Structures are given as structure tokens and as C-alpha cells.
Length: 305
View 1 (tube, rainbow, N blue to C red):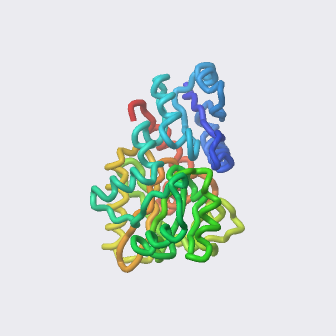
View 2 (spheres, rainbow, N blue to C red):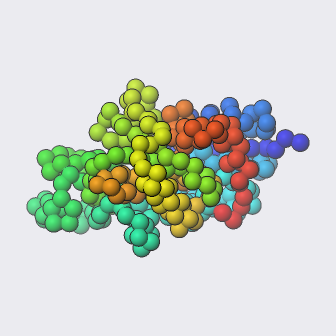
């Protein structure tokens, strides 16, 4: 008998459209093997889950509510097997400050940062002085709990306050030291170090448009042109981060490679599965088709993740 797979997609985050693209890709890949349905996580979510009676929920949500432990806690309560990381690991990974503190405690190199609170902001001159003494320009400013590089800005001293104003709805944000260098992404598949890919964006950095707009023309380089020793090093760091956060299933870690050092920017527990997504591309290079990748993710699903 065919198993019933409910794909959760859409949602309320800024990454809604990417989530729906991921869901359509997953649906197309598995519809012949499984009884499959795409479902929005709206006010009728529990009713829809109980009505469809899935064997497994494929979590294709991105950003808040889908990637932060919220929907995972609902699925745990309903005792339904689901994909990707669990409640605690999801909530840790999406919180850039908490995950950074864990990286630092475990000797994983990550860019320096400090927290900025708009309600406590007084003088521009004091903030500039703090940046110059702790980080120096350019800096990266971003929310603590958005994904897909939503509302992330690289700022010089000249455009800092203009970009800072754009983030005022968040109340608290991260101001982080900008690390130049090469952008390298690593995929982990369970306990397996799946591989790495280098990105050369035509844009300023690998932002939301570079990730999901084909017209942005980001260059993907695989295999990554680094020594075998350095490749093993970055793969091991990614696996270590995956383990210490307590992740399950597939994750993607974002690195900068600068002056022969790897800086871990963040770890993604719900990497995209669109035609431009990196994990499927890394898998394909390692002779794992999109269907096999998705099927592995489904078979890996459990409760108590």
C-alpha cells in the first residue's frame, strides 16, 4: 500500500513563494510512488492533517513558523512522523545569535557581531564608534530569525543608516563583521558529508535574488577548487555544526573562505529544493538524483527529532 505524504508549504513567512516552489518540486518528484497532497499551514492545519491521515509530513516550509520549531511542535503533539530537524534544533538554528554562541563555544569560527536594539538607540555617533572599535566597516546587518538572506544588507559607513532604517520593524537585529572571500556551501545528509559548492554571485553577495532568481546568474562551481585537506576541513566543520545543534535529515551550512580560514555564517535546517537550490545540485554531483534525495528525506522522517 502506498504511503500518504502531506507536504506542508506556503505559510506566512517572507519566504512563502520559495516554500511553494520547493513543494511543487517535491510533489512532482514523488507523486508516482506516494499518495501526495500539498497543504497550507493555516488555521485548519490540524483538521487537515487529521482528515488526510498522512504517514509522513514533508516539511517544505521556510522561515518563521515552519523552520523555527513551531510546526514541528504541532506534529510532535499529533505524533506524526516528519522530515528535517526537530523542535529544539530548528528553533536554535534559525536564531542567529543563539546558534552563533553555540558555534563559538564549540570552537567553530564565525564572524564577530553585536546585538542592536532600536528602542535603546540614542546617538548615531556612539553607534559608529562602537562599530569601528568592535567590527569596523563594512558590516552586515540582518534580522535574528529570517532565512534566505531576507533583509540582509552589506553596509559601508555611508549607507549604514539608510539600510538600518529598513530593519526598524524588527526592533532587535544583528550587526556583524563582514567577511570577504569565497562563498562555499556544504550539504549534510544525516551523518553523511554530502559535499560542497562554491558560489560566485554577480550581485553584491548571495542574497535572496541570487538564490532564487535565474536572471541573477550566480555562478555555481562544483567541485570546489580547494585542496583535499581544506575540503575535508570544511566538510568536518559542517558536520560538527549539524551535530552540536542536534539537526536531523538534510542541512546546508553557509561559509566564507578568507585568508585560508572558514567562517561559518549560519546553518539552514530547511534548505530549498527548487531548480536553483544547492543541496539537490550537490546531491546530483554525487550521483543522487532529485527523487532519490527526496525519497531519502522521507524515509528518514521520525517523531522525537
